[in-house]
Length: 496
Image 1 (spheres, rainbow, N blue to C red):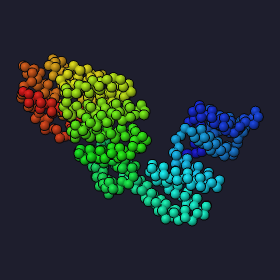
Image 2: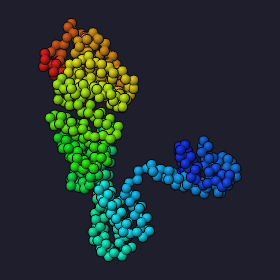
Image 3: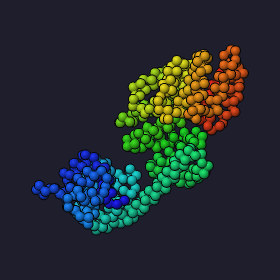
Image 4: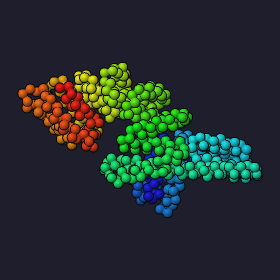
């Protein structure tokens, strides 16, 4: 990109405050005479599109075609320097960088003892935070200070201990970067496999997991490396259906933070997310007693920002709904249900719309499982009535199936006939008409044809047989995650 384009884009990107700051701190006016660089800035700012001939014309002869190019380069550099000064107090600069700059200032002034003390403080902090390249920079300062002062003992110490340690630290950083490369590739392949069901991606995922750097936990030599690798192993074991192994990694990941409480303060939201992953693992492996105990600990996490608290409350609702669904404790935890409804009512505006849609659907499913059909209908109707069908299409499709089941349980057979036909048309239109949906619609259709609209045992047996035949199909398994139609049909058959 040409320098002129860069300058024009930079000027156009500035907000009102940045422009005002630049004008105050750029070249000062000479008496009443305006700096030509400020005039160049103003003309650039007023241009709609960059065109050099129009620019020269508006500059009134202050610059020629020959002198304009270096002037633009000068103005570009001046803008960047001024912006750096403007954002100096707004951009977070780590203490390590500050210590390093201060050490160099002290060394330039010949204050080597003070520089050494400050370098020691910076080195220790870099080691605590596992910023290994930063720690190596301080080792270089130790070496320079020792040679400047002629302290032979310090020079020997640097050569025999600190430089060897520096080499080890760089090896650990290289180890981390290699591991990070594997992790980044893994998550790319996972997404690619979901989108395209690509067999080659699956094979490469297996190769990454079996790589000695990833498969041997002894190779995860730092907190950062462990934190990153646990995310990968949790994701892999979960997608591979290894739920107990997944729970082991989730617990190890949580322990990693619990054993380093100083990192919980720095990364509180990631910690809450990791804890939430662990809670989900307890639910799906049916560790219900431990879940209730750990749930109290999860809710006791101290939050310091609104986004942390909102994520915690949202996770609380989803954890409890998943627990109630997996444990089938629909009517035994009314205290949780009342609490969830209160939390949701108070914070619904702060949750994102998709979360709200899920919560309404899951609450509707919960009330359906507990036999509270009127409440279930209220929540499911809310999901169906949402306008943005592209965003909520899957949930709205599943909500319509649950809507039919609710009316069936309420013996609304006359209404059910028309509702089933409407649902069938909707699912076809949205390209979300699965085999299990067709089986259920056909089940209702057989009722219309019979003299007695109440289903007989043979109706349920036919539906169970048809659902059993497709239960292992991957696409149908995704549908059953929203609502286990086969389990419902088996229960109805058993009660005949």
